[in-house]
Amino acid sequence: MEESEKEAIREASKKASHEFKSLVNTQDLDSLKQLQLIILGRLQDSNAVLSHFNDYSEHCYSEVSNDFSRNTRLLKSMKTDLDYIFQKLRSMKAKILATYPDAFPDDSKSEALDRRPDLEIP
Image (cartoon, rainbow, N blue to C red; front, top):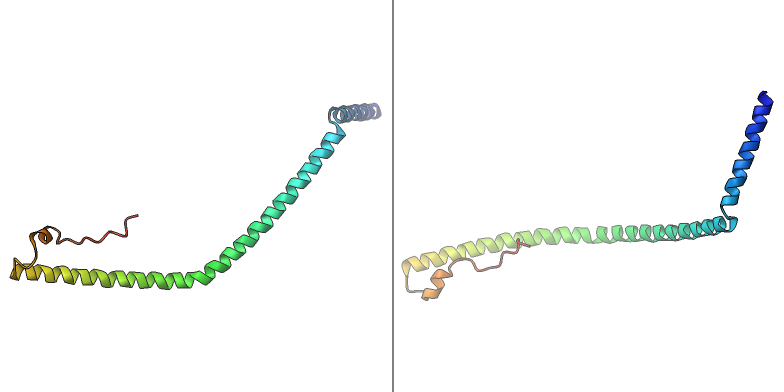
């Protein structure tokens, strides 16, 4: 009985596989396979282009990063110096106004505050 069961299972699986094969057209499967290969090729090309771009970007960044850091430090130093200069100018103006109240026109008293734009606000 075991042989007959195995034979029945074998026949049933052959019939099921034949039914599956008849459900799907082989030309459709071939065209799907061809499309998948085309898409795979395009994805591989895109991957190669992106890898090349990443390498190029890394190279450019390594060339520019030192200059950028140096210029950033320079700008921070310049800002500190300018802040100090404007603080001294405000202090001098306040001393002049205290000593000579008529030294500046009346309009300048109300605008004695710093009129520079705040560059740290985006």
